[in-house]
Image (cartoon, rainbow, N blue to C red):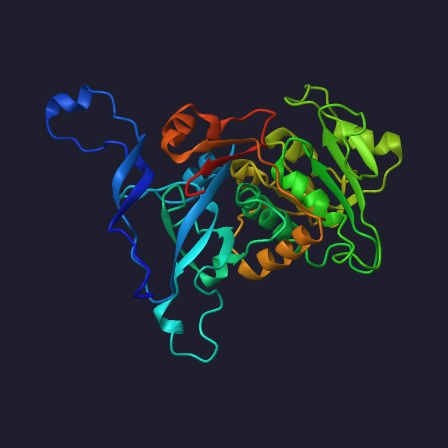
Length: 365
């Protein structure tokens, strides 16, 4: 750590107070379980970096409506206070000690402005300081604000990995055909549409893109086909019939941002080709339970997108941001001190048709 950089021993932080599960006497068996709560603490211990971690002073941190719900489902509970909001933007305060004596030094330098996605197995960035490893961050694009930068990592990396990790060979040898459900109201869907229209990612051809959204009017996105599919879906909604009626060929890739019913309908051979890929960004339980015979019969790969931090991919995304190909969307900005009210209101768990909208916490700007 730079000897001239003062880092206070404590900091402001918002964290989850774990639910009470201890039974201390027989009468407590009949008492209701004490639920968890969000706490704002002005005297929370400042994290101490290990040999491979950067200490970053947080400027902004952000979350989408579904993020905290999914993070609680997909990661084991902790016995220590857990700081949420794993999308962030901030400034490097100290660099990893293990890089101090190697040629060239650390990849990121003191005072670098960075943005990134912290692993959900560790504390997030709803605090004055956060720890990050090299593979979790990239240099912040210069043409956007710290608030917008914090909205990009999770949805953009989810979209990136849908295209280049889970379906890397999809559409090989021909133009890729993609269906994105609930595209207008989903940040993942919005980011995916931007990536699909990036000339540097698809220099040889233009992918065919179909979206579902709440209203069949022009949604402002550069797409080839639009399906009116307001959520929640009507019981008689038939995605396969729409594809047959329109005479559309099945797609190579489906990225579902709507939920279980749409995810299930997307597995029809009229919608996705033999050997195609159907991914969901919002419903891990649907992906785990969907193992029907028809999907297995035509070799569809089906799963939840378990996004992982990826500094190299985020650096590529940052280049697209600076080319004005990719942008984030800020729904609202609140101060960190008001964060407990926002999270306690249930905004992070909003379901139904609205999966999008990124809320930003202003921390040190």
